[in-house]
Length: 94
Image (cartoon, rainbow, N blue to C red):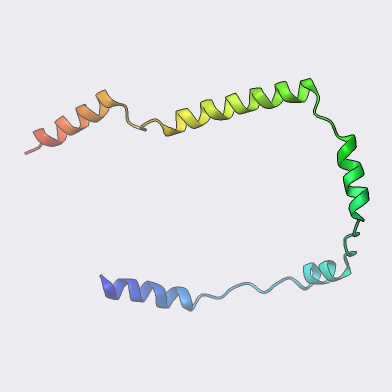
């Protein structure tokens, strides 16, 4: 088993990796530097943004939807009757 793992690691280390595309690198180099904004401008933009009742209702709906989804995902994948049936079939095997 250890030899198999070592063989897999050795083969993975020998893998060739693709080179970066020169075109992508040159595009990144030519991209403009982001504009730095004064803090007062950032604060003034945030003060004009208000949370409306529609936004609040939409967010509450989304939160409830996500909670329901989380509840569904946290349930067992195999329900109790099926699990018991599977366990019984395993016990009954010769």
